[in-house]
Image (spheres, rainbow, N blue to C red):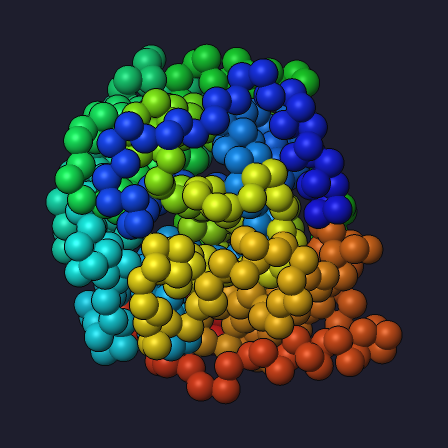
Length: 483
């Protein structure tokens, strides 16, 4: 599929060339040697956007157009397939196996390792930047964003608004709901976040700024007003491509860690209640809704005073399953759980490029430091992507690594995915021959040397699990007991 992405991007550019607006040159180019940063996070967005081709019917014109104005990293992966550890890794450029933050708690300040690091917003503040943000940049537990981001403007309702009663018939976790709600875009927190961003970008800034905008959709509850559902009629909606008995060659540990103690609906429940298409529809509706909000923010940047001197980074914190591998939600080490959109645009960055080298979300922090001519941090474990921004075909010796608890790792190269679980069982996929990861090739002797190279990327030292009680903690413990 990745070979098709260049074609998709060119097609999108041709279709939108008439409406694309170049970044305006600033009339008040304040401190032109020090660029601004616009840091856009989208919660739970997988590859179901037009330029990544994850779903053939996904309508994301604004993200697609933005990708055409910079470099799209088509092989980008999170460091943990769940919100808190992924975002902790992004903001510190440390692996979960280094910090001990593997699951939904604890916070960065509760790790002896990350508590000694300077998180991204505060580093930029130390460098003389005006820092402000709103929405979900770190995990959204009470007080965390406020503690780590100067001038934090709030969550604007977070995952709300919530109806008085659940819309779906799923009896589980209250956040696991989907359907048409509320009536108007303006009632959605993400709409209000975009309005806040528009207002801030219209203000005069005396210093270079680091601005964070953290959108909540398509995270559950997957609600959006009716007009977004109308884009995806159920009668013509396509389901993700799957095969029967996809789990037959998956180790039992791999099945357990992606199911035991999880709060999302099982695929059996989804099929028995005929909810697969409604789930796909709701997810796509939320994706298109948040794409519109991204477009509003970028339009405000283009039409203000700072578009010519601002680096824009857009990413998602992890992937999301919607029936693939017979499961729903995040928390997996497969492609659908780890692969994310990542794109970077700004001064000096070539336009319309797609890079398929394996990169990591934790690479964003060192990349922004280099783009902004700031000194690197020797504690960072991520790699600056600036060399790839200059030459997408550059020889790149690095792999992308994702973990879900100690001993559970995915190692991704340009062509392959290797997975090792804590009981020693393994999986291996060749994305050229098997982009959907349907056929585990771990026993195929043809790949033995390649597998060994990937296996060598597993860290020898792992920090103990910090925190307790979250879904990830419970699933990990249950999987270990079931070995």
